[in-house]
Length: 489
Image (cartoon, rainbow, N blue to C red; front, side, top):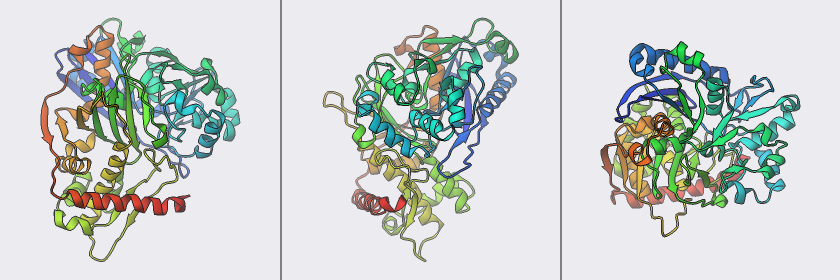
């Protein structure tokens, strides 16, 4: 039995996986984000620990026998967050999250300081990454910076609490701007540019390797395992989702409709394209990498719209959007979904959301459609940044994340992307399932045995009906952003 822990932005999810691939149990605990100032996004790590206490208690109550059979734990989590510890291992300030946009000036300074940044790290300097956050802390909170002894990513802070060991792995570390992504090692040059050294960094392992062992007192208190419980290296959330879906071979990938929106493709080599804000990261398995585009507000934009426009919930908004007839979509408003700035392809922390073209003729359904369409166009812009070589064709795109529960939205994406999308059973458990599978690999499992594809629920084939309309509206969407770009600043 294996336990996968997925520390997301809005919830911590725990999943029990049997070695016949059965998901035995799932538990969730909600998390909240604090936004004390414009562009800021923070969480107190203590909230993560409280959530972990809750999910372990829930699993013990519902699946105590299975929890006691756990042999290894895998960790997945939101990437890029800066969790700062002092020499005693105490948290110095709230963690600065992936969707925090305060460090735009520090990104520019870092790019000037290290002209080879994109070549080494495979990515542009963006406020979402960890390194610019530390530059911001050094400039604005110098007393805190002087006390920083260790910088950990969110899931790696959980590992530290579970084991006492400061360890990270390649896929999450690749999102810090401190990793030499091609060499899969910390870059002394990039660390020095932010006033840090290797001593501030955790030890590195591959995601499928053993990283630490669960503290015996925690195992006894929670009823986890009956002997030594291993902790796998784990993965950043998107690499973990790929492992959970069995998408680990070159040319396999997915579109994720989570809080953020992601287009992800596995590769067998380091293929950076920083000019278009495409991310080139290490995968969670040895000798594998991946390309990834990220938009900062995907399902979260739908949640915002559902709350703002008084829909009962996100499902009700999606139902209203689906009710707009195909031949009426052209008259709907346009929506720029940049509620938290944007990464791929714009790398613009100042970008803002826009609802454009409202008239008296528009009601809740038309606004709902505009929001979902706008998120879909943003994902298409990210998809267009991927550059796979001729010998690595795109083999498959799965649809994962909470938004994947809407087949209508999935079909809209297939039509806008003009590529087939596959819905797999259990796709909404991707990150936690991937973490559990990495635990299985650390316990001696083979990739071919562990990283299998789930059963196909449905394949969504692109329709030619309305394709010209999507192209026309997508072009207007792009023109609207360019027209407003300078106004956002």
